[in-house]
Amino acid sequence: MVYKINIDESHSIIEFYLAGLVRNAEIDDFIADLEKATRAFAGRNIKIKADLRAFSPASQDVADKIKAVQQFGIENGVQRVAEIVESDVVALQLNRVARESGTDKILRRFWEDESALYWLKYGDTERVAV
Image (cartoon, rainbow, N blue to C red):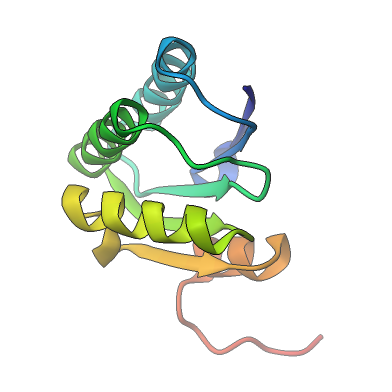
């Protein structure tokens, strides 16, 4: 498993990249770092960009931990989640987890970074050509 977390202070965006087959023993470090980043934005409207294009379907134990961290995010100010996913199998698993955690109400799925970041920053406002 490989992961990377970046912070955009000016827009309260936490961007993460998660790749490979995630085992139960490996997910804990990622979750701890994601929760730390979320706490750093306490009191703000937090947005998450999850790049899961290289993520492999997870075991039920890992899915349960993802569900718990999604619930933690909602409880701590996450307002929007943009997921970038390519695999239909991963998308189906993430749909189930999002429904169970309540994240499905604030989630949108994207195919590429630009539109995901635009939605996180500006919501559903009309996009103006420049």
